[in-house]
Length: 341
Image (cartoon, rainbow, N blue to C red; front, side):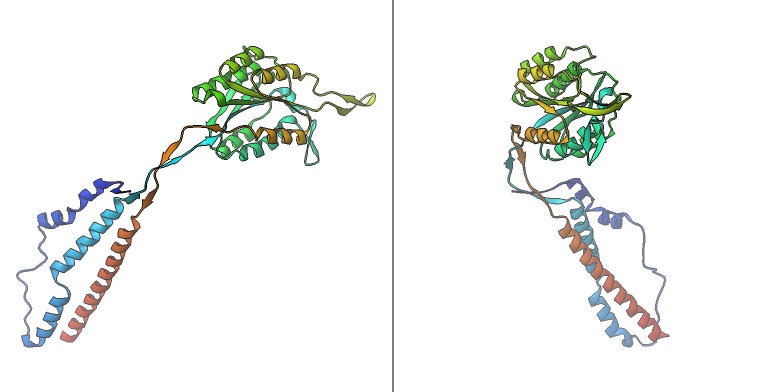
């Protein structure tokens, strides 16, 4: 256990009042002035009382004490406790969300209303991110282009905000799955994550139609780098639509390349999930919640307790006492003047 001042240099100001008094040329006494009293005996008792109650040396010492206490408080006296090791555990997850044009398909129900796939994904992903207390989350948005929207961070509110602001077509209308995986590999590698706990969750509703990197080759590289990829295929299998020939059933997920997504996931030690509706999407996120936490090195912690309020409070009490005494002495002077008048 240790006591010390956070800002000890402030204590260098302790002699300032003495220096000001030492080098000041102000002479508060008018040596030419004199008080002529008809009968000095009348003031013997008053003079002795005044000298006893307010000696200049005592008052200066009190003022200097107040100044010293204020400086001690400003220097922030602290008590440092014994070091404590805190194990830091949690997941390091990158979430890659598809913003291609096909995410506009309204085949999900949310609150009894039909919504597009991105809106449903956002709704469920918000809850997933909110539960990631102690985990680091990163966000990748991809379409024809791929962007690291949020690097790995503990700030869940920021990740949710950037996810909410994402719009379909922001990164182009096509789908570059391979580039998204490649960016995930680079982000997790640069972050120095333990090779056993590099995790990417990829959500898409289509096939790879753009990008410079082949998805399967990117998955092989991810496996070599120790990264696990969980893929989620989004979109209903059947949807009733009206046409000139009446109501007919279509498959809005006909372009979803499930075989590729399964190969990517299983090749890296992950799992492929199929989200046909909002309920399935919620169950998938619940399963992802059970991912094994990634343990990182312990971080040292020493509790710090501030004690500035003690000298500051004492200085305030002495200042109040000084003020009260000064007011009373002033009132005594007024009474003296009244008696002389």
